[in-house]
Length: 471
Image 1 (cartoon, one colour):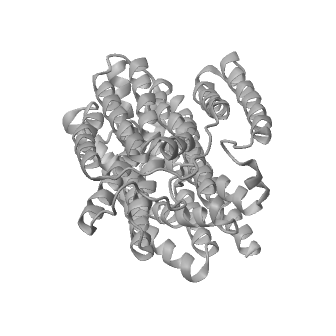
Image 2 (cartoon, helix red, strand yellow):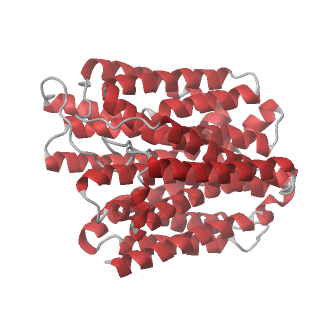
């Protein structure tokens, strides 16, 4: 994350907080509160996946319709990440953080009470607005209150682990909630956490802001959301309507037009939303594309797991969520290992090992087996989780390496946006793969999805090889 641009992974430039420095005990609570909010943002990226069949049944919609419930949140979050950080820099991080918490909490209530699928999609989009004011701001708050370099490094390490844990915990917790309390509980669970975070933030977090905040780029912001939203719309609607039908073709045309307009606009602005000059660095470009590939693969895995097990094999939501445990274990254990390997050997080694693990794990699931043993699937998931755990930190490290410190935050913000774009595309592609299949044949029919995950891993191998050559 950045002070200047609002990413999600890298500490931005230090900015003095308003008022006296917090005491050690107060700093711990502030850091914990920021991490709690980040846990919610990551959790809501994945927890709803496990409830997709239940939501579809409740509203009488199909896979295409329920895909929008998941992607509305991700698209808005991806589009507003950088602007969320810029707003906090300008108007105060505590203020924007409190607004983000309130919006996220209200949107969660609206999701739980939504009477129709379109209103649920709208409420999920509003959740994304709130999340965009939490994701890029929480780490900036940590950076502003934790001034000791060693303590800050530990806090940032914990931050990365919390985000990974939240992504992995979503399907597991979601399975329990859906099975025992219904799909509405996927959103109810946010409310008490939000109330606690609001109270702690209002009472303990000092206000801080950037000394020289970047101007907002609202036209660039609008074009970015249009480009991402139109692309995802085309990918969601295409499998059901046919790729030659007007809606998918119009979506791709709008995407192309918005992307061209975005590039032309950003090249002319003194303070662009995304500094296109960063893409002149091959390592940075590959890192952003690697972030897209990694999170696209992650969401495809979660979608395939949900549908192939719940609808294809008739598993309960709890059992389906529990199947993700090996994946979660791999991420949790290997994320800190990746950080240690980067410090000793550089980013290429963990990135290459992680990419290879994803390729092998997904490759084991490509052969269409009618009744694959649970241990076999769990072993494949463990390998994929190990891969995800190993590749995330090297991607961020590669994005910011070789750049001056004042540009590292912006680079991290762009990489974080790439992750959310990848997640949105992954949801659309994964949903498209299962949308046209007979539920009875899902276990055998989802092999193209596993092939896509393996291809994402293969691309990460290319990124790792490029990083090794560069170094």
